[in-house]
Length: 110
Image (cartoon, rainbow, N blue to C red; front, side, top):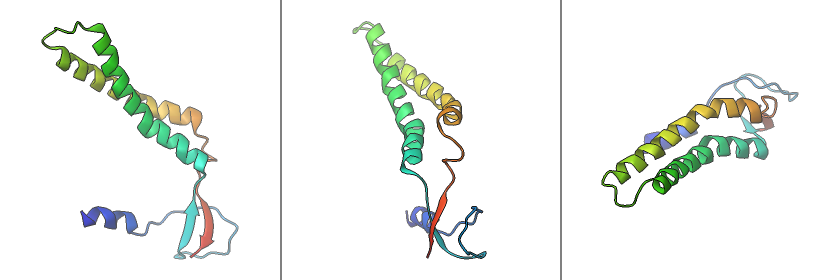
């Protein structure tokens, strides 16, 4: 399990435009806006989760209670709804997440 934690703590290198006087190799603290982070989390996590439960509830409401394969059909409907929602993520990101707002900002030199 420690290899998972180590992968998050390793240094990463990428370019960000800034007016601060920095040189290659400087360690900095970067931030993103809370609004962008919230929108991205809703699109990536909450929407597929809601689709999963909605698909299951929809199938459950259409099926008779005494059907022998009801649980299998409900599970399949939930999975299908989840997969369809995953296909909608890219178009929703392009529509609701402005690329200029998504850019990280260098907060300070550490």
